[in-house]
Image (tube, rainbow, N blue to C red; front, side, top):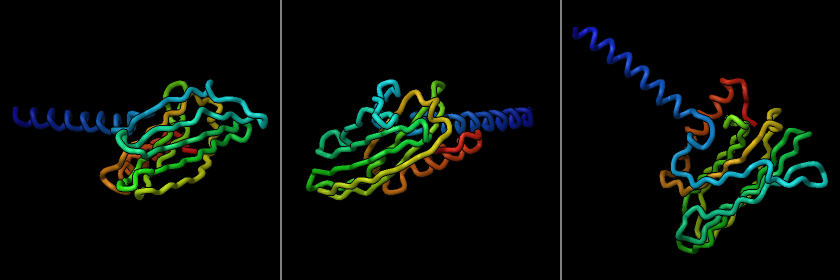
Length: 179
């Protein structure tokens, strides 16, 4: 009887672990904890003269009580299968420094990741910082939404890097390499 219980317990722990791991590697924003998310429909991105799509800008605070901002602009060139992303953080609070996590996900109709962008920057009081990123994916034409999330990363400079690595590994495993 004890052996049966032990075997059943081990099976349940194994299945439970599988469920937890599966949930930790789901597509979309469910992988990322404590982010404030906004969704942009690709249909809301405006066509430009060069044939690319310019998505509505993201402008949000990373700390709701302070003058600290995340700005993201995204353009998608479907012909070249590239997404260009500009990320700017502005810490206008002269007394507060933070680590700031910004994650951008491009998802298809089924909510599967096409492109994943993640940065964790140390922002010092009064600092402004910007960078441009480019991602390629043959699946960009299937993009339906862009999800952008940000948060103050109180655990430091590597917070959520493990989530990012797991999401990228899962994309590789599924044969949908990240952009």
